[in-house]
Length: 528
Image (cartoon, rainbow, N blue to C red):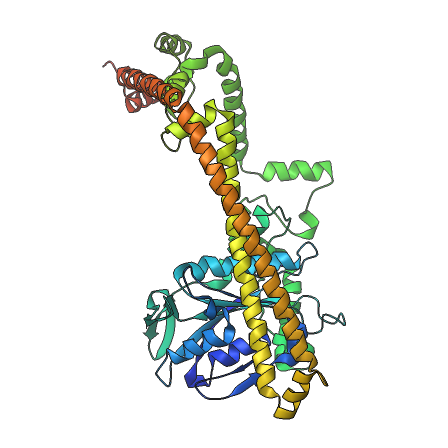
């Protein structure tokens, strides 16, 4: 299921935290902290890693796509002994049957780009699968670690000042610090997931928060049902199950979500879910407020009047604002006499003749040329498609290069870990380190993929240049005709707008017409 769990925290030196150690743990790599000289190695947990990548703002050097380089630079930018060196956001990823690894990666990547990379920060994304997914003991603990820099990247290095504008505001209430303003990451993640599911046609929604909210267990407590936190989680689950059987609790939850009106007839008790006996049904109807039945009757009468007057009085209804229909026959005849000779809807459409079909901006010569020339329209479509393909190729190149740099960093770490005898045997081929060979082959594959993408980008760039030249030639040939048609449309639109303004000015005030009809309905003679 999809849940809205998201947890944010700072990596602080005052708590013994290290950005290099956290990045190493998240990526399941081996790194050396240049500030302290410590070496961290989490290769033994690589079976839980689904994906690793680093997202950088545009214009940053590719050398920062290496985790070791990036986070050692982040550590070097901080001078205080109690500095906040990084920020981490953990997102619970859905484990529904319809969700694939590509979906989870796209969700985590899009969330990071929208909230952090677009604001100039560097983000390391690591997707983790359940720790015991192979044995089937854990199937739903998919999650993403977003390790975020606290400073923006400017050119070749981190900025001199931290991104304080993105930090939550903390105020003191008494002696206790409280976060006064900031992102509610759980709510933000919930809304992002629902938007993603809807845009991708997935029939999934984030589960709402239970009446008794649960707490995050973590892998250790999850595997130990005798721990205090696991027992507390079981008690909370039992309380929620008991509340689901209580009609009063269900009603309160539905009302809090604006799904139930305060109807005195509504009764969610088991014996009153739906009356089956006709006599019982009649008794329920009698207990309903009389005004509800009167309102339903008035609504039915009004709907019948609308249907009967729609065809008979057609354009005359334009003179009555807020969708009101004339009731008095004399008033209807008077309205029919005041209907303009030219329909207002036609005038409104003619007034937008010099705009694009969607109506959001004025049309240009290029817009008219696309309508007149199918060849030019095809060239414009192809131009947009080629731009998209080039952008995708460049993005893929960044990912492949980041992978290759990461594998090369793994080669360096393995080489640093070997002694001189092992290095000599490895170079001569008498003995080969398996982990080192795997890193070398992976780096070679990543660089080959990067080269193929570079060749594809070059081909697409050439096709784009040719298509732009051909499109420009077609536009030059059809430009005089497009300019003539656009000028004619502009003249027609100006005339229609002038006629529409005159028609509106000739009408009486809408407020006066509304008040006049209201007073007539009350039987008041306005002529006195």
